[in-house]
Length: 169
Length: 169
Length: 169
Image 1: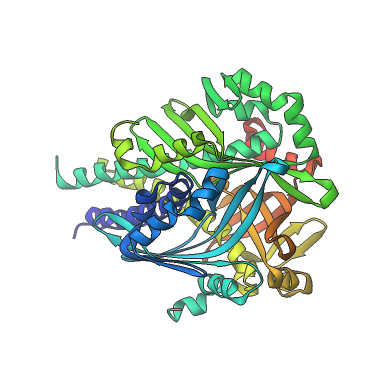
Image 2: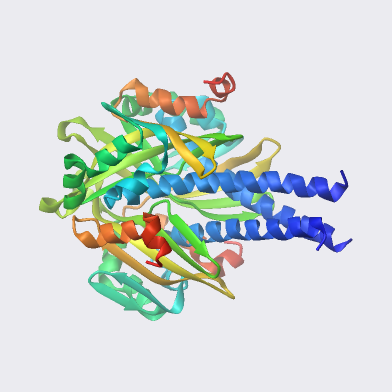
């Protein structure tokens, strides 16, 4: 292969990796606006058809269950009194057609009485993705409260501990 | 056109799109540090000369009005007692020389009495941009409180609802 | 140099700049999950061997001191009762093998009594980086509280004020 073809192929790989990372960020940046506006279908479509959202103690299986959460009474009550589902800057690992994002989430609620917002939830999240014909989609999201319990710390250490990462953990 | 020229042209388009997205993120990442340091001119320069910042109930028209907000009594009082204007991870749509970012914002204030910070405002934001000879600039920013009112939800659903997006809404 | 070689070289420079920016974001996105999971070595490895973390009133010199902070009694107490070290969207300046990120940080603590989280700290941060054979590493991070004191505002204005930036400040 001529040298410039090799250079072009190398650039194509690097550009695709960058596009992948921005596409994954876009998914996290879409989740909050979708659920806080009650947009059940756009929220559910971030997942694969049988994708899982495990947010203790609920484990939602498939898009229909995720859409039902958005249209459900609890969620509707929150967004009609003022709620924000914030996602933090994600730590990203892309490996071919699979990827993992590790990020904080917060659920912030309007408190009319004090003219302010209360942070109700702060979680450690692991988002797992697959590349599909329709772009990256979530196969599994786990959200664990940072309340002192070991589970959230384990989720975070799995992302940042290179030795464990190399062992496929 | 030879094959490698086509490949290079395709890469140039993709790289430009990635650069656009990072440039738009940089604008959001500049706004907070500018206003929280009282840097009126750098804050105003993020907008076009006649750009609008609509933050209910105030609608600021043009750079001079935005700079006046930063140097104004209320804002100066906030930043001298401790304030942070936080912007969330943006949902981005780039279309040629126009772009839209949809993101959360928060205004967090120091509360000396409790040695902590209070979230005073949490908003849904739509930032509209134009590509200029000086790079991307804000033409219009709308900030609506997530206080249960429908306006903030409508702003968010416009960004994530593909059908409405395709209709040009 | 033939025209397509020039085009490829220009693309390589642009792609490298984009990769640099995402690599710097990844460092900020790694810091929180590392310290909030008590992963002392992964946190320390974000810095150069003799890198500095200046978080008033402590100034930590070198990786060992940063790791000691993570394993120390205060930090362990925080993460075992629930803590989140959040980093905001960074303002980035890359200049060859040096870079600077300017961003907000927050330290959010679980408050069991009110079933919520309290924002204990909100800071202005300047992260300085060097490109090494192992990728980008932090040489110096300064974190100053946004409590009304001039230091945090000065840190932010240095990042956004173009005139000062051009003077090398």
